[in-house]
Length: 431
Image (cartoon, rainbow, N blue to C red; front, side, top):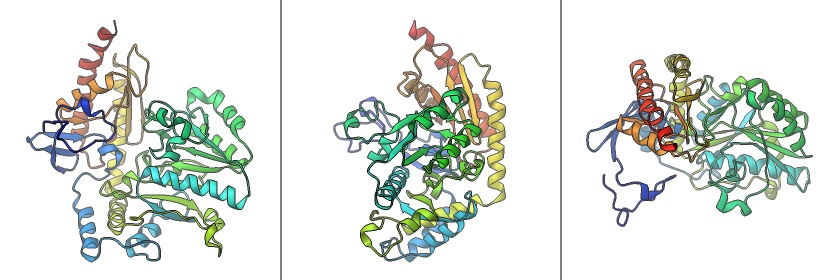
């Protein structure tokens, strides 16, 4: 579809619209494949921004959504409840690190973070009567694009226009093996009297698929809990099998006080999120004084259609074959990583569960604005594969229904594109 920017009515996300002379129009999708109006098919190798778990147009998810739609589409969630919300929140605790949780609904990953931060801050201000709360986050963090989420994220070109309006946050190095010597010291220096620590467990997605040292992350959580810090795990990307277990937090010894879920929550079918908090946080707000309640929400809180989709996705997640697929993808990624680490165009390669991340070799400074990003995106699209590089980092994060032969094809395309677009061209451009 040719774009005439003067008459085209849409402003697309994370895009400089002047860069787009043409944009494919998707008319249908099935499994891992997207089909455009010209008959081309494109592999959705990144699960459409990490949301799609079970493949596009999954009949079971569609069936449960339609059944709910035939009953009713939505009802105000303040003062009413419904079957699918109850089912979802009764089933999820079986898969979380422990089972005494309360669930607060919102509509996307960023707002689930807002809810968690507001809960923590309101708890300290109202219950503990404190004047100042110390927010601590990881360098390279990304938690969303609303103001609280931006405040807790890495500062840079995404946030520069709003810098004076963001609240103060102390940033500590990510708990990687390279940062082992300085990470704990930085946390200890950052801790105040009343603290909130927010982190993406095991993998920091938009930061470039930064992968944590699990033991070091656990040490940070132990130190935080020793100081009675409220801990928030942003599992918007890492939840629902992406790191090889139901949730990344399942792999940690120290359970966070809150867990934020979205993206794969509905299998990628509809927007919805949950802020999952421990019972004790809920109990703090449980009084007879309305002014001390958590007065937060939005019009579509607990939407029944999205809840139906989430229950359908849970049905599929609880099937043995889904976990066989997760293990197959994880195993193939590990084998591929061993081969890729010796490629001349690869600076580093890392895996965690169904996530494979490759940083390309370059003489330029690493980062999201690395010029190779656009070139790689275009090159992959020409090959029929959707990959949106995080600067100089490309990654695979496919739906769980991907077939072995399709995954092998994806690795082959990565090799071909890296050779033609990086190894042969990038250094020549620099010099």
